[in-house]
Amino acid sequence: MYDIIIIGGGITGCAVARELSRSKAKIVVLEKGNDVSVGTTKANSGIVHGGFDAMPGTNKAKYNVLGNAMFDKLAEELDFPFKRNGSLVLCFDETQRGGLDELYERGVKNGVPDMEIISGDEARKLEPFISEKVTAALYARTGGIASPYEMAIAYAENANVNGVEFKFSQEVNGVKKKGEIFEVACADGTVYEAKVIVNCAGMFSDDINNMLCEKKLYIRARKGDYMLLDKACGYMCSRTVFQLPTKMGKGVLVTPTTHGNILIGPTSNDVESKEEVNTTAAELADAFEKALITMPSLSRRNIITQFSGLRAHEDGDDFVVGESNVKGFYNVCGIESPGLTAAPAIAVELAEQVAKALSLQPNENFEPVRKGIPQFSKLSDEERRKLIEKNPLYGKVVCRCEAVTEGEIVDSINRPVGAKDLDGVKRRTRAGMGRCQAGFCTPRIMEIIARELGIELSEVTKCGGNSQVVVGRTK
Image (cartoon, rainbow, N blue to C red; front, side):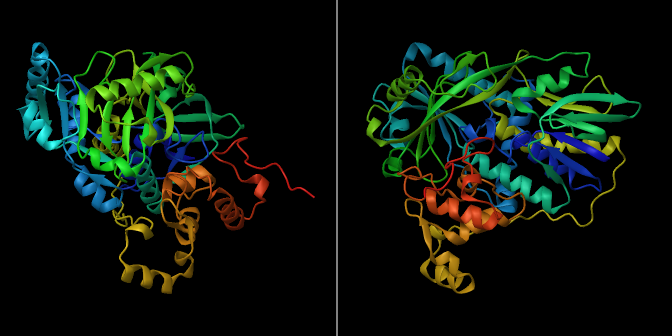
């Protein structure tokens, strides 16, 4: 029996969990995957949007602007990668200049500070590699970039330290209300009870809502393909660069990542399956061709990996946030772009609503600060020496591309809500995210996972389930 069940361990679920842990309550997060941040969050552009794109008066606009303003303090408290690098929206034709003016006016109405429309020449002074065809740009200085999966992990770790339980491989397939208590049934037969449910199930949040609520929701899976370029070309872009948006989204962007790569994408294609994340040659080619419009000197030779992710587009074209028609059942649904930016503000507001409804008392022992894993590659020689003296495992580099040590990998497995597989280690340490894409370090990382978890090598998976890397030993 819990006070609160949160369904979904993506960025919104983890953020809500952390904010609710400020109150005295018994809270559990149910996640159908074997880790947090394994759905939409892990395949995310990582853009902290300024707030000029969303239509005034919508939840998207409200939470975007509120959330954006929270990032500096949050990144300091939770120690996740974030940089306020600014963003540009490019206009390539003077006849489309009205589109920039419209975005600017939206931003003003939404309360976005520090914006201006600049000339093409001014834009090229900021970003020398953008196209000569750019005639004007909207410059929003409050735009930023964050590491979405590291942000979700930071939220989850802090929530866990403050008392929130996390249950993995718990796919919810039934929700009922009996009197004042909710019953949540999972596919493995486990049943949980709680006074309040917070539905943060991402792509499947409509399914959870529709099990119980009179007002039905419909989530459409919108797939986006991405390309990640090597750090060697990171110098080509320092701000997030958009093209003028369309009704299908903000279009293909070119942006630096918090770790120094360049990210291209996403495309935008509605698909039937809520689990269809395969990439196609045609969609990837489309993404790259559109990116060349922004930055003609980009080269396919610098691509080190390609992937796709799904965005949860609700038919109402806005975030659905708050208590439903069923008392005690709260929705956080349709959280597509600018969902990463909005998540902190959504979490604070929803936590306040739930705490008030349950008359929860403040958690006097709440610890707001979370310290991340030391990044050996970013330390000075003196800091490295001291760290190795304290823990010799930090002197053993396992991933050469990203200079990730055994100490970091061990920490990623043994810290709160720790990694259980190769992708979990990768999201926490970047081991396997470099130029060789885990071509050299995989066997050693598997050995460390097996040793730390006390399992056989054949039980180590890439991403849980049946994703084993090896099937046995040769004689």
